[in-house]
Length: 272
Image 1 (cartoon, rainbow, N blue to C red):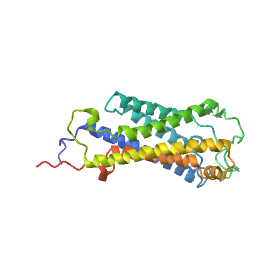
Image 2 (image 1 turned 30 degrees about the vertical axis):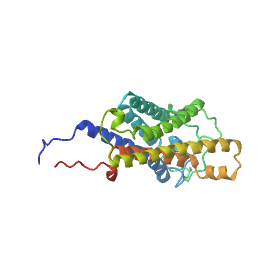
Image 3 (image 1 turned 30 degrees about the horizontal axis):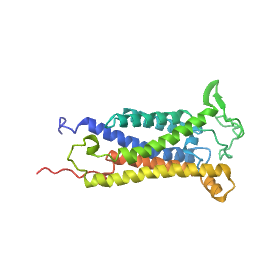
Image 4 (image 1 turned 45 degrees about the horizontal axis):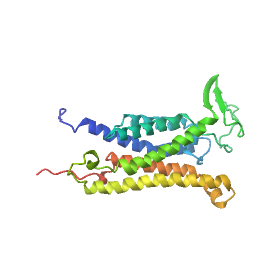
């Protein structure tokens, strides 16, 4: 076994793996938060209304940790110019702010866990469903959760901006060719690159359409919540699925950029 064989430029491998990690984290976030709480949480096989709402569950560490990892990867990622660096750094800051500034807690429903703890090795504490949006949760005289009203506005503003930026990255940055970096080049994009660009644009548009759809729904639901259309979407967790679709579109876009989808990669160059 040759332990001294030469590798491809390690910097290239590092950035390729970074892109794949960002993609996988985005894809796994809704699966781990919702799936973990469905199996191990208080509500068996029940979706919450938003991925962000899992901040208030036992999957909080997964939610916060995943967003922070995405943010750190984006901060460490370097684009082809200063503008790309600015876009990725801004997306990183937004992702981290989303993690630490929580949405307002939504009223829950009765849990499947039996709260009769006689003979059990744990105690349970429940907050009332109609408590103020601003609250502090203490355990053993230590502050466990603090939520203030303005956190909600920071959370949703950052989330909306982040999805707009992620759509822009997929549509406008990932589709750049060698001519964007060197206008004088004669290098032409490969057929595989042209095919990837179609997918990048499609995924970016899906992100934009998804968040636009939720924005329209929010306006209509705010004025006419009694409409059957609004009641049906609310009952079927429209925000959760908008977030899921957007995250998967973002994730697959970065997976493709990291050459994680083999049949979309450039064909190897044959040297005669």
